[in-house]
Length: 196
Image (cartoon, rainbow, N blue to C red; front, side):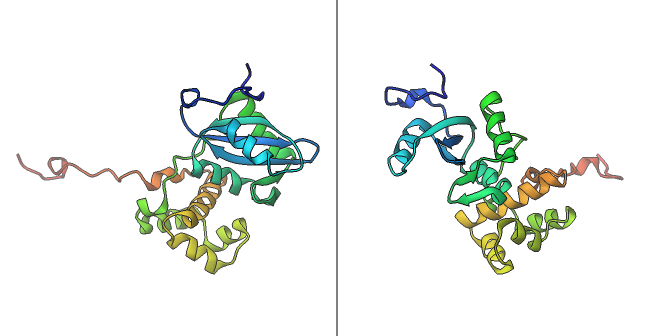
């Protein structure tokens, strides 16, 4: 049975190894839902019960809520509302790649919530790569004050901020995951002039 066809039985926990970012087409309506769930088929069944149209799973890849947020932010200009996006070329490129390769269109950095990183390192990374508060505000379609609040929040809000930084970093050819890497420390015995 293809993973892209409805499963006639309720999925068991052993059928899933982890969360997945999924793309579901709204049948008869030019929209795609982008979500995240450990139990994708059950989630779609629950979503369908509240909608006037059917939905079909068209792509998925292993990922978590921050990966989902990254895709949401990357495709924000095509957002119709909530987790629904226009079924356009850029969105199609993401879900076709997910369908064919069970992977995101391009590597999503291993994001962690902002409270797990030194804020000075995040600011320095942004400055180094030209990622300003204004660019993040423009990407998220919010004002500067909201971006600053997002940056200070430790949970939900920071995922917006972090995802926007990650998307902008990717577009600038940078890897945001370097924020979490510890700088290499020199061994004291390797210093110049160190004696044994």
